[in-house]
Image (cartoon, rainbow over all chains, first blue to last red; front, side):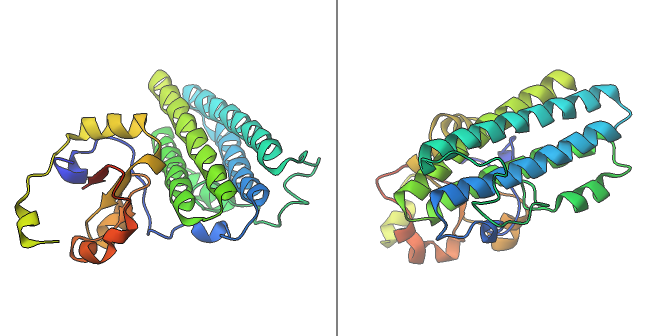
Length: 180
Length: 73
């Protein structure tokens, strides 16, 4: 690529090559991997919902309300993926019953509680930049996990998560372009 | 890698061309390689890029599928 990364005018991820991989145990069953991804999406949903309630700027608050809805959509897609790949119906307490995971995590691997503490007093642009960075890190992680796992079904899970996250990033970018 | 290989012309793509390529291809259909140092990678990298610092490239070529196009930066 001419100009190297300095010429890149797009989204970038951050962190070491192994960042975030510990959350997904390599030997996990495909349904467990989807459930773990669902936990991260639900964490992001809670984060965006909280931000929507915190912001005085109504335009930015509406954007985070829309992002909250986008995460709900993404979670529904993951439940469909779970049915398709695990051949099982998610229980009413999903993901409980499938995995035991730290439910205070969100995309990017950060704790929701810590992210919300950081968010206090930040302006909407800073919050949006953080949100895009975390979502991009999630996209980066799913690509790398797809490379890491060996089982074909697990590769298929991460391949589908990559496509979902890519589409999700596109919707977020469109929301940002429309709202700001 | 033979010495003469260092002088082979390599096709380059602009950043916009790379973005279009990545947008239109699934990540499992190409190799995307960051040849910088670990600290540079940690600070910022293209999503999905594998870190293989330039000095280590010869030792890690086996990690790249030669049947797929490789984009490096």
